[in-house]
Image (cartoon, rainbow, N blue to C red; front, side, top):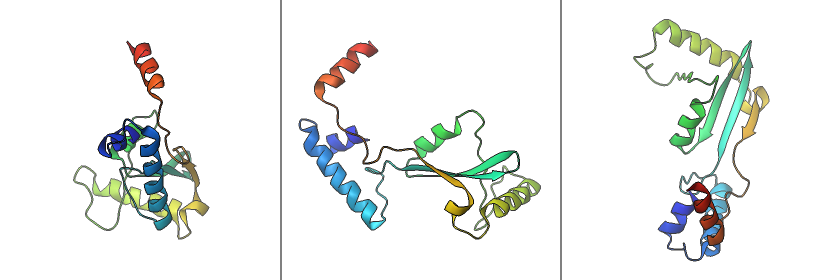
Length: 142
C-alpha cells in the first residue's frame, strides 16, 4: 500500500518525503473520522462469544485483506443483515438462525462492551524501506 502511494505521488526516489505525506494524510483522515483506502491500514476484528464458537465482525477498507482473513483455519463467513433481502444461497431457516445468533451476541450495547477487539495494523502505518533493504530482500528471494 505504501509503495503504491509512493509511486502515485512520485516520491519513490525520496521515500521519507512520501511517507511524511502519507502519514499526514492518514492522520487527517483518522482525525476527521473519514475512510481513505489508499492510506487506511486499519484492520479491526471484534469477536463475540456464542456458546462453543465466536461470531466476529471485520472492519477494513480492503476486501483482499478480508478474503485473506476468511482463509484462516476455523474461520468462515457468517453474514447477516436485516436491511435487505437475504442472499439466494442461504435458506430461510438458516437466515433466521443467523438473525437469532447475531441478535443474541450484539444486544443493544456498544460492540466494545459485548465482545473483544483486536487491531491488526501497525500504529502509524508502515515505514518506507531503504533501497539497500529492498535489494537485500530481492537477493534473498531469488
